[in-house]
Length: 318
Image 1 (cartoon, rainbow, N blue to C red):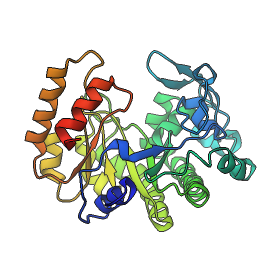
Image 2 (cartoon, helix red, strand yellow; image 1 turned 180 degrees about the vertical axis):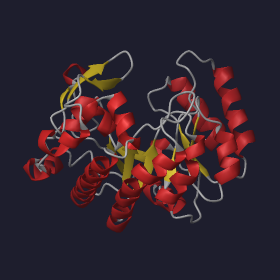
Image 3 (cartoon, rainbow, N blue to C red; image 1 turned 135 degrees about the horizontal axis):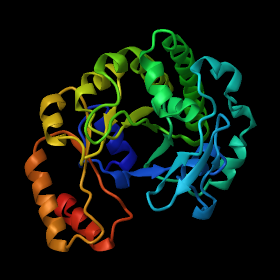
């Protein structure tokens, strides 16, 4: 019998699997020694990390505040206003100063797993630009011909940093699955045009994906919002998969249209108060909508146990 790791990798390589992969097959690894994990409020490691310590300064000199009610962080203020100033103003992290060996020792039992080890780059390209110059200035910089050249240079250097980070996570801890987080849409539309995305963002995302693949890692794009129009760019960028935000996109339509070119993650995400009957109906609808489709299932281990047990029973027969 395949391990969860082996089964998921076979799925990602478009090989035969023994069961439909799911989020319980991952082991998230986001150690506290990486400032981005603490400031963005997502630490996953051997020893529990107190939530009251979330927030603070991350990479690049950006300060974040963690909002417990929404489970995420916001930058307190932009670092500067003009993208032309990025080379002078941005404090680039020195990855050599991170205690990579110490992280391994402190998590040696946690990392003994037959699951696929996943880490997250919480702030990709556009969100990173926003954290530097603010939302309005970031939006303008993508399309202003006098500013966009600086965006290209910044994104290229960011891509090199992310590739370096991926290599270190893979070589030290056997991380093989990278979640790249960069929201590109709102509930109503994309944040920029298809052409702007293709010209200014995709080349650097593709550079990261190619670097990860060269290292032997897979990349999931995490991008929320109504980003359906951008999907040809997702395919061009070479992502291995994407889950997206089920409340903002027509996931079933996307799978129907692009399922032969792309591997989707699909959610079952009941509300915390959903009844057993409601969760069972969600599972029935899921099986009806995606019968015969090559997808993987995303559901949270943090949901109430009765919901988790119903999904395991109805979908996996466990």
